[in-house]
Structures are given as C-alpha cells and as structure tokens.
Image 1 (spheres, helix red, strand yellow):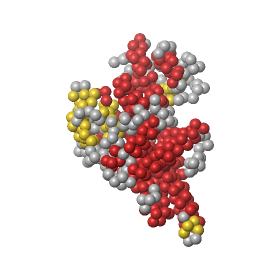
Image 2: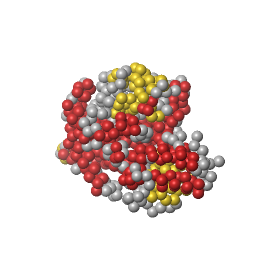
Image 3: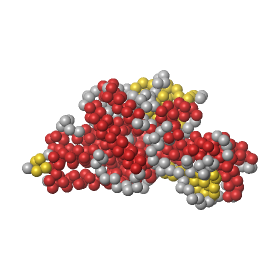
Image 4: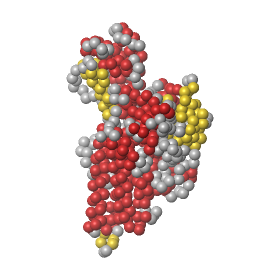
Length: 407
Length: 135
C-alpha cells in the first residue's frame, strides 16, 4: 500500500493504477535488490552480479527506461504528472536503479529532438524496443577538472575563454573526432552502450562552446574506467569514459555551440526536475520506515510515537515531504509542458527535495537510535543515498547561484 | 518587413500547405492516427492556426477560435514559421532559444517531429509558388 494520501483529486483511474503498479515493482523488486547490492564492497562486483542485471532487465521489460520517449517509437510517453508519480515511486524503492533507468534514455531522448531517419533507425527505435537492458545510455558531461563549471549556463564564467572543457571534438570531413575524458560521475558510465556526450567544440567560447552528440561506446578509441566506489547509491553505476580519436558521423552531433547554452539549460531543467521527484521518494521511504518503527518500538514503557518529541519530529518530516512533493510536481508539470523551461523552478525543486531527503533521512536515523546507524536496517542507506544527491546533478549551493541569475 | 505581408497571405500559404498535406494519402492518415491537435499562435501577422484530427478520418485546418483543446500549442512569429518550414531553423534550437514557445508534454512534441517531415519537403516549392523568398 502506498503510504501517502493523494491530494490530487483529478488523478484518473489509469494514473492511480500506474502508481500502484510502479509501487509494487519498487517494493517487490527494486528495494530488495538495492539493499542487497548495497552490501557489496567492490562496485565492480555489483555490475557483475546477476541480481543487478536481472533487476535492470525487469525495469526495461516494464518500459521504465522509456518514460520520456514518444509512444510512436514504442516509448511509455508518460505525461509530466505521471512522470513525477513514476519517478517518486521508483525512487521510493531504489533511487540508484531509478536514476540508472532514467538516465539511460538520454541519448534516445535527445535523438528524438532531431529525428533523422538514421537516428530513428540507429538509436531511438532500438532503444525503445529494448526489453533486456542490452542498450543502456549515459550522460557524459562533467570532467575531472570541470564539475560545477559544466552546469552553469548563462552565468558570466560560462563564456570565459580561460575555462573550457577537457573533452574536445573537431570536425574532419563528414565526421567528428573526439578526444578527452569524462569524469567518474558519469551515471551508467561503465555499463553504457551509448553516451550522450557534451564535448567542447569551440574553446574560445569557454564552457559555452560545447556541443551535444551521441557516441556509441563500442567505437574504436573508447575506454572505460573502473566503477566508482562511493558513499551512497551504490547500485547506480558511475565511472569515467575516455575518448582517443573516436570518430562519429556528423549526423550524431545534435547541437553545436550556437545553441549549446540553451540546450544545456533544457537538459539541466529536465534533469533537476527529475531529481526533485526522485528525492521526494527517498524522503518518503525514510519517513515511512521511521513512522512504522516509532509505532512499535517501546522506550520509557510506551511506543516511541507516544513521546511528544518523536511525534513532533515525525510531523515535521511529514510536512517537509508534502511541501517537497507539491513544489516538485508543480515544477515538473510546468517545465515538462513548456519549452523553453524556467530553470529556476527545476533547480528550486532539486535543491529543496534533496535537502529535504537528507534532513528527513537524518531525522529518521535519529528516531531509530542505535539501530539507525546499523546496516541491519535500511535507514543508514537512505541517509547515504540522500547525501550523495546534494552534489549529484550539480552541487546544491552552486545550482542556487545559477538559478539566482534568473530572478 | 515580414515574410507574410498580411494575414490573408499567411492563411493561403500555411493553411494551404496543411490542407494539401492532410489530403496526402501517407501524411493524412498518420496525422489523424496520432490524435494530436496542434494550435499555432502566430504573430506578425497575428493569427491562430489549428491543425486537428477532425472527425477521426480526415484531418482539418481551421483559423481563429476553435472548440478543440490543443495537445500541443506553438507560439511563434510568421517569419519563424517560414524559416522553420524551410529548415533554416531546427525545432529544438528554436525551442531552446525561445523563438518558438511550446506548450504540451515533451513526448507529444517529440512525437510530432517525424510526422512533420512531409511538410518540410513540400514547403520550399509551395512557398516559391506563392512568391515567397526561399533562400
């Protein structure tokens, strides 16, 4: 059963069914797999685990990798409200798998913005029809020396020629040739088959001189690093990708510097709105565990829930989650329905919801007491997952500066 | 100086283009099947152009207010419209730069793009035949 009251009285039967079905998948498949994989020390072992692939395959089989893609290609094509509902439920079960499935569509999603016959045949349709996780996308934007630098469109430093990317692409005839490296934070990085890559095309424009292209990762010159060993979201594969003279057809370069900054704005708006929805799910997961625990754990001769301080804390957590859902749904519905989007709302959603997830998970750990920091219980995992999100997809503090430029 | 000297000219060119396309044995049924109703809010000259699945068998072109609810709403100038159909400006770029403002779920907009291919192919000749510049 879903642990919150749906305040949207206009939700249709089909939308309620979608929510229930996604919740069931999150509860029965994603949550147990994510907890099990979290116990594995070596991230290389995680991606060799049959459990990891079986879980990904089930997600693909249900089409969760295609929620952003048109039904005419075989995508789920959920509307913005449905997208929020699905992402929240998936992340309630496992934010690591939810991000992995969501990011996977990036190459096909961007290809569908410029749908040439070749891109439809090579990228979009095979991805939509894939039901066994044999085609996986990733988003290659940050670099070893450029994290926040890459995610600050329309700020003064973004066009500073003294600051430009390490991954470069140059035109040679009908091809683009790519050299350089993307950071260890590329989600799905070491398991992906295709990368939506953000290389620099014109360094004289600084970070604004970028482009966006699709790189099949089986091309000569592509090398992948080891999976990143990190604090939380351990079932989300992340890792470096190296490019050494990698050649792609010119048709795979989707965006050039002329429109790069605007398209980055669209990318960040889309991704940050999704992060907001996902971390409402994480906050809710932590809150629900804490509430259930508080009602059965006896201290001072009565359930924790009967202690005023605990009751007060739980209601504070409840309020934050409801506020986070209201903001993130509104931001997603507006920005996924309006192009160009208003990035400040997506960033507000990302920052508010990831901060909320962290605060709620921290309070939940506190309510659990000693058990909260024990790996026998899921709370410390939710706490680690939430902490990582305050940096992931843009560090919250620097994102706020980027958003403030639009005020 | 705008490409469409007045609303009547724009109606003849753009309305005529869509009527021609909806009558096309390949494009017409595909568009009707998509179930998408597009509303173009055009400025300079000002007009509202609707392209709808009509009665479900034959698509319909209409101008002005319309009873249907738009699935996708595009707000753009007449000049941007002309450039867009000439493929002098790509939809994602126009959207990103605010030359076209779109309302409607992204998957619906993305679904629309391949459907519009015949319009791109037909427009240069169509525009030329109406005395519009195409270079």
